[in-house]
Image 1: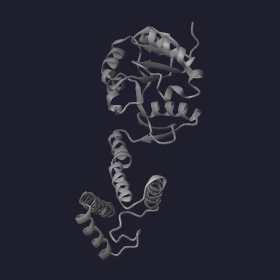
Image 2: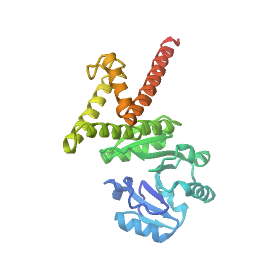
Image 3: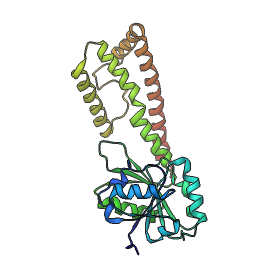
Length: 274
């Protein structure tokens, strides 16, 4: 009989690239590994040097926490198979790992008494940062596992993974075309090579430092020391001589003004709410 281990694994497809499964304590904790094909479970067990393959869902019962590394498209099928099995789901914790899906995708497991959460890597230079969304019991269990491995976890309020998506898009994706525009402007102005990259990096860091200090969009252009008259003259010249860059600036400045007006209105509304 296998020794009882606190961690089980349910996988579909190739899981060898999983950052979660590379956490240092996984070999100490891992017990049963269930896959659609026994050879897949054996291969992963050999790759991790831990755990043991099982042939049925029922054999996952020996684990307190079950990590699910399942492609989004096949998750509904796997959940249906779980619920149709003889595995007693009540009070078991299931954590869907490295998926963009929200905890709502695990609602059927919740209805059978299981605790659920989702775990997703934060894509930064710090490879061991994660966000968690879900039910408190499952969150506590996966958090303990992460803390043992010096990984950092950020909890999302239930139902707010869409807001995390918005933050990632706004902070990590949408600025890229703007940085490309800044790069083009500097290159056209005669700055290139390492000097160009260094200048762009310092501009970006200064922007974030300014933002972190509570300074928001400034129409008076005080960061460059320009008066409104000078800034307007530069914008007009850009529209004529470099229309592509001028159009980008006009569009983004109009959008920034709209966003900041909405933020100010939100502050006023919250302040006036009893």
